[in-house]
Image (cartoon, rainbow, N blue to C red; front, top):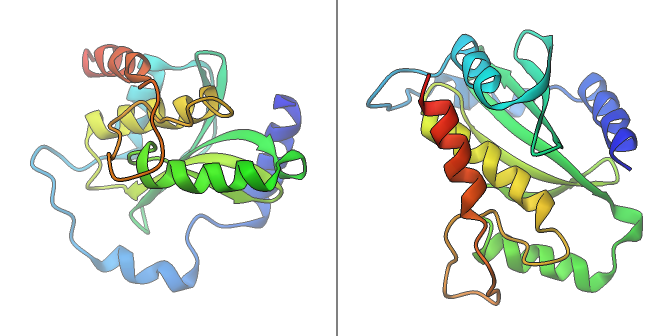
Length: 187
């Protein structure tokens, strides 16, 4: 199923820009970052430090693997936005109970990444302003989206914290996030 998700993602890239005209207001906002502003070059360095089978498709677009899971990163410096995407499953096979479970997980076990649906696919998605993104948060975002794919159908956890006010309880998948932080922050 992964090659199909990659094909769907390629169509998605061609047909949908990262930022719509309605989102242009975000590009004018100043971002606060105590270290430095994230750049496409810095993102590339971090991806090279942690990824396998890396393909930089265009300026601001990467495809690579983490723990054998395909990861896509799209960044737009002009609009100060980025997103990390991991294709998880086709929506046609999901039951109503799974849809409900995804929404419960988005409330209490997904932390900064979220389950999302587009073009008939369930995605793990992490969205953030580009300039305000720290190395640590970028690497954590990759780990969280990969964890959403790895825990889909089980704990539905991004590996971060669990909000106790929700319906979920399960194993936290923090190991991958720590591994990526160690590798990426070493550069």
